[in-house]
Length: 380
Image (cartoon, rainbow, N blue to C red; front, side, top):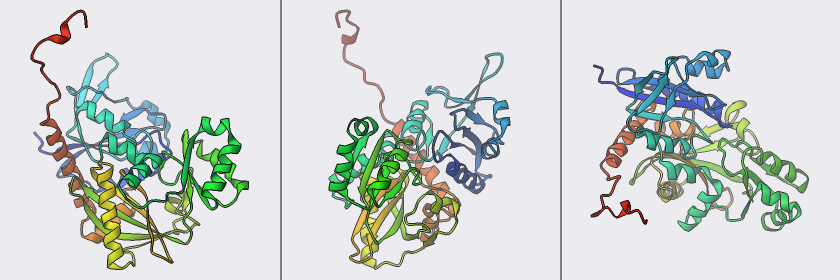
């Protein structure tokens, strides 16, 4: 029998970051030690169809019609299965057992706690934060509120509203934005990543269009004050209750802000690693990163993003990403490489964290035996 760890890599998904996920998954699969791990590819199409095949990644990348020919797999919320279930044409069930799963779906239905909840029900170890931290890390509004409560510095000029709230009184919300936020203002879907649906409004003339675009990706949006003349600083975090932090990096965006095109498409943005900062500022941002990680009860990995004003060096915590980009050139990876942790070793550590957390959680009681059978009484 093989002593290899069976690892399922889940990628794709029903998300605006579907394509980013495919690229991250490619890098992870290539970097995994084939002598140590047996790799099971689990692709999820944009329609939500689960597929498991050695060709799943290639077929999703090419948007191939052959996807429809692959046999569907299922991950059931049944701890007795602990793996991918296949139902053949004769209604016979077979199970591909898994030791641990590496979910690398960025954004909705992967990074937001929904997939993590399924993995908890299936009783399978998985890399990254749990249900609560994943959901909090995805919601830009709620995480900001928690960061304020934790005493962390954020942009506090912000408002948020749902689509129905906005439709009921458009004039009121536009006035709120202009009087309480002003311009420039960032308009953001509350629950997306990779800057999908995010725009920077400099005037009322473009504001409504940007709000409409944001509502294409989420029912709730955040509008916050844009920090002018700011540097973008990032820090990578791994671990659990006592997290470790990387060196810092600075993003020099090819566009006015670090939008989707600047991150992935035009290839003109630059990363400076380590960032040219004083020792005091480095320590301050690293400490803020640890506190943000702990405040949301994160686990495994995160990338924490900051703004810093060029004139006064004032630091603002922008957001935390619980499933950061994971290509070989992604900031999360490159910051750890600059800190002395190679890509393959980083993956090993994250998998080990996942197995350790699973072992710890498995030791907990999940039931309670009352001293009498009070709950069986018919009059209750």
